[in-house]
Image (cartoon, rainbow, N blue to C red; front, side):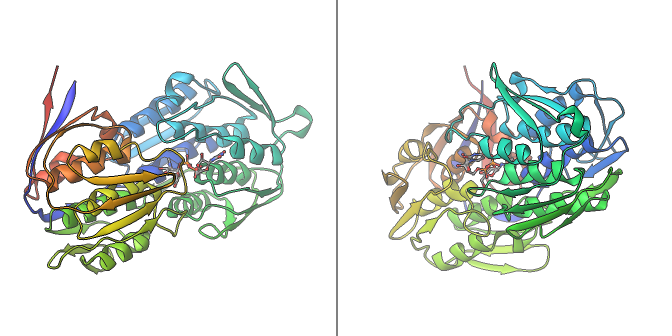
Length: 424
Ligand code: UD1
């Protein structure tokens, strides 16, 4: 099995280029199911989750070519081979459920495995299904699968008024993609406002969709007959950006993050500034430096534009090294403190009370053998490993390969001692 070994305690210094956003690229890739024309996507990060999505789309009938660089793909679906998303692929990656809306809208049927439980909570897809029912789909749950179809007499999905009971990123994406080629108009209320939703809407509009309001909580969609191909570049990864900003802060170093957009992570930048980190932003880059003490700062995770749940574990790692205490409250997922027992192995002082954790910062931490539990949790172990003296060995690193392109290379180029090793 592979593990990551870190000899920590060195401040990071250098430049890190930010990759395309995983969470934007995944739904964008499924758009190839909405057109028969050539669909080119650029700035796609080279990650395990992207490969899973490629396998899923290929078994639906997509031909996928890698273009001149490893981050650009041409996707084309001439004939649909299968409208089924099998359990084996969906269980690997929950975002596989994003094929449901496009398949249903374009081909009138879809059979998608239920994602099941996952490490950070039960994560049902009931809001996705309700939204698609509002657009006229007939949905049955059978033998662990969602079987969805458009009734014959109806021909296509029809526009409808969707009100999400609470904010769901994937649900908003599935509904928006399905409604783009439905008959008539759709309104989505209480829509997610994440930048990835806006990126998806921008791409759909270039393909001929008529979507307005994406990025706000009310999205209006005028259904069109069909969509054309497109050549589109994925937006920068705001979670990767935030993670490396914390890497600079936690090692008390200086990093310049390029090919990114500071506007995508205002909540994280604000929290870092309050904690004492110096941050300068320009159009496409962020400079992070540390000349002062880092103070404990309370945060609460919230849907965008609030502090992202995908940055919670990284913030906890930083707070474990701060002066003073911080309270961190997780409001999106019910079981997202799996990293706490692992961070405690470094000597971190963390107590969990329900949805909140109290972290009492300390400089008396040291490297330790630990185990990755989910994607963002595992990167918090890397961060604390980089910050603390001694050797850290992180097991189950496949979680990291799902979400961080070239992690070791990027960190190594800034002075980190980090390598992948094989262990029995
Ligand atoms: C997306 C992101 C993930 C991020 C999350 C929240 C992708 C590929 N993944 O996940 O990295 O952590 O947004 O920002 O973009 N819920 C229901 N019923 C549903 C759908 C969601 O109860 O039908 C609940 C979930 O269990 C969770 C909350 O709503 O508690 C938010 O989930 P959602 O926004 O849907 O997350 P994802 O789209 O799965």
